[in-house]
Image (tube, rainbow, N blue to C red; front, side, top):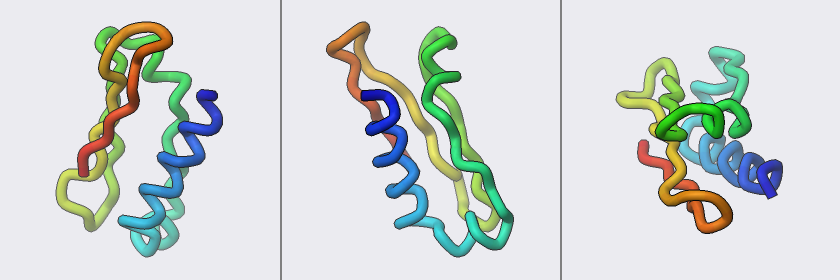
Length: 70
């Protein structure tokens, strides 16, 4: 499930900022690392894109839902 969510997130980032991702050769974020944080959230900066992407999980356990703002 985590890999599926990660692939959707990567598609979203590429949809919004493909040129910047390619030009800067960015490595897209992996979702496993934020699960170890409290709260489970990260910020993914994209050069040339104001604000980048804010990624977090809302809720706990199996009912947690991914949320991204850009």
